[in-house]
Length: 94
Image (cartoon, rainbow, N blue to C red; front, side, top):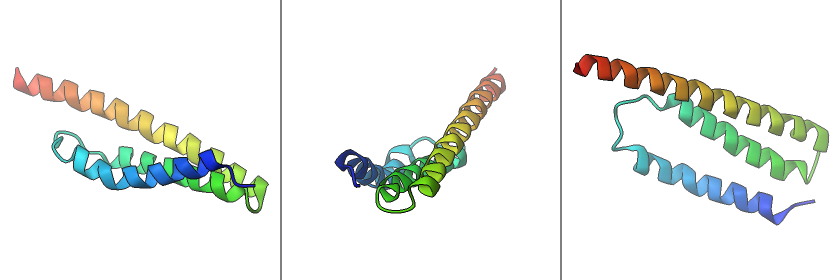
């Protein structure tokens, strides 16, 4: 069964997918590949959440939670690398 909140999350997630490049463009000091991968994992999780309400609940529930876990790992990795790159850029300025 479809839940309106899940469909709205997916809808706004897709809209944000097109807005993020415009908002992130001014920031060029850091490579955002892992943030992008994490965001795509989040969108896939939203998509699997919607699909699981229609068919194959167990399979899509597993895929949804796997995507949430990968989302967390990608963002954690990206945040630690961003912190390292900021420290190294500060050392270069000194």
